[in-house]
Image (cartoon, rainbow, N blue to C red):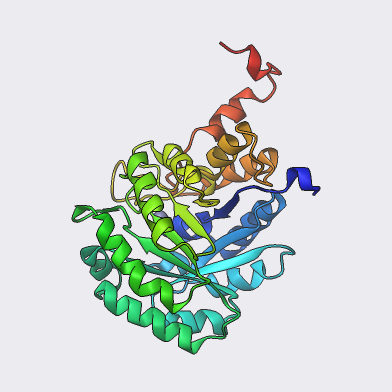
Amino acid sequence: MDSGTRPAVEIVEVGPRDGYQGIGPFIPTSTKIALLERLAAAGLRRIEIGSFVSATALPQMRDTREVLAACRQLPGVSAQVLVPSERRGRDAVEAGAQCLVFVLSVSEAHNRNNVRRHPLESAGEYENLLAAIPSEIGMRLDIATAFDCPFTGRVPEAAALALLDRLIPLRRDAEICLCDTTGRVAPDHVKGLFAAARDRFPETPAWAFHAHDTYGLGLANVHAAFGQGVRVFDASFGGLGGCPFAPGATGNVATEDVVWMFERMGIPTGIDLDALVPAAREAAALPGALPGGRVREALSSRIGTAVPDTARA
Ligand code: ZN
C-alpha cells in the first residue's frame, strides 16, 4: 500500500465479539474462523475476536481461545479480546492475547448488572490486572455507558471524566474508547464529551469511539467524534448486534457503512468494500443474527446495473 492510500482512520472490527455475543444459536468455530479470514482479506487489521467471560453468561464466546489461536495465524492482523476482570485478563494473556480490552461502565447500575461490582471496584481490578501482566501487552479501556445507561438514562459528563481521572494515570499509553452502549447518544453529546476528555487528558495517545446504531445516529456520531480528532472507530460487519430478546434493539454501526462514509469523504480506511460487503452479507445471514446498516443492501442491489452513482437524482 503506498502512502497515498495509507489509512487515515482505523476501523476496529468488533462484530466477532459485540455482534456475535447477542446471537443465540452457537456459530460454529470453523465459521467464525472462516469469517475472520474474510475480514482480514478485506483489509481489517484490528479485530476484536471475542471475550474472556463466563461461558454460562455468554455461551457464544466459549470458543474464544480457539478463535484467538486461529487469528494469530493471520498475517498483519492484530487480535484484541475483551475482559472484565483481572482473572479473565490473566486467562486471556495465558491464552496468547497480545492486546486486551478492559471493559467497565461509568454507570453503577450498568456495571453492577454486567460484572456485579461498583465501577471503582472495576477500576481496582484494572489496576491489579496491569500489575499482573507484562507491560508489552497492548491495552485499551472500553468505557461503557460513557454517554447513556439503559437503566438510568443520560450519564453526566462529569461522571465519565471522574472515572477517567481514576483510570488514565494507571497506564498512560492505553487507548481510551468511549462507548455509546445504548445507541441513544446524539452528536452534540459525542462532541462535548470528547472535547472535554481530550482537553483534560491531552497526553492520552489514542481515543476511540464505539457507536451503536439503534436510533440511526451511528454514522452521525462517528462523524462527530471524527470532528474532535478521534481516528479509531469500532464497527461491526453486517451491523450485527442487538439482543434477540429486545425488539427494536440493533447492533454496532455497520463496518461497511463507516467505510463507505469515510471513503466518500476522501479519507482512506485501508478496507476494500468489494471484499467486505460479501463477508458482511454472510454475517447478516447467520442464523439468529439481527443485522443492521444500509450500505450492504444498497451496494448489493446496484451490482450489475452499471449506473454511475453521479447519474442518480
Ligand atoms: Zn457495544
